[in-house]
Length: 497
Image (cartoon, rainbow, N blue to C red; front, side):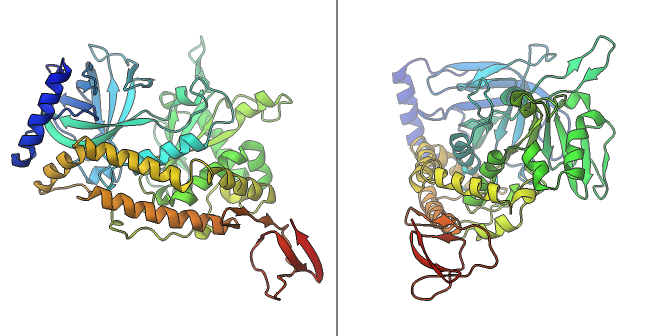
């Protein structure tokens, strides 16, 4: 592969002008020179092609040209990824792992300013008609939530990504998002320890919910190499780390949690309530339909050899679980197959999400302490990462990037001429405006659920089935939240300040 690098500003400007003039007359296929002023270009090449269900990586090369003309070119291996995404091979999502010259070793490299990694995700976003839902939601998550312990990445535990235009074997495929991964290094999990006698001590673990690596899934069990496990009926997990050391020891904490940890007391001991609340707020506020149940999230433990009852909190905390989101594209009113668009979005009610919680959240959903934490996290989030202004700004930033770079029109022009197409809209500006309108309504629905009216934080009353509450007009109050004022509670006048 010959590196393509535009050496001078004047040459880049001239090239952009030529492309702009020629683009209306092109079929959309011959777009090899479409380096823009705003989106990097990634070219990958390998022998063969991506296929649905492929399990082997293909050796090849990657070449990433940044917007300043700088080029990184190195060997890499590639494999298609994603269950739903595999139905859209006209715009495949894929894993990219950077390798040494002979492909024998992984090579960590910084790409587009993202932390140094060897393993990367190229998200084709084939079912997302605005090509940004996953990225926007992780941007919100990274702003809103942090790990309850320090890491070299400032406690971040969501992906970071940048949009690029992708060519596969010199064929244009449109806008992708280049993301880092949720892995041991990001979460600061303790490495597995290889002993002199050949045994391995499992320490840090990372479990991923939802896998097809083990079947059937009607009863508990393991796959052949113990890298996948069914812990209960149709509740399958894969051992993301340490995947090279699949063993029963690695699965014991997860097995114990599902077998013996259904009480609020257990969850309070082995999980972080604020972490669970943050995850629930993310799902509720952004209506993320594919991440509320037995798929699309991780559970991690920094070191399973630690004692949860250690008197030193910093040691005990290393044995606690962290809940981590993953694949957030079915969000902001969207549907898993791209079926909701043009102003028609998911009507999944906030209250219904809360009433259908999955483990471990299901164990504490009615707990007074958890309910207070959950409400307080929304009160904090609604002023920052989840504010209407903040969410709109993120959507509009990527909208402007796609449109002003010309990348959106290039992608639309190309796929409009193809028989097989991913999901997209021609008028991105209109669709983003409709998504913003949806979120504004969702924001107010969240406020109503948590008892906030026009920014006024109402008081949450203690749970009681005996005390009837009325306003001064004699109307019974059904909500558990009360605005400041005077009420008749169990026959007495009470002032709520």
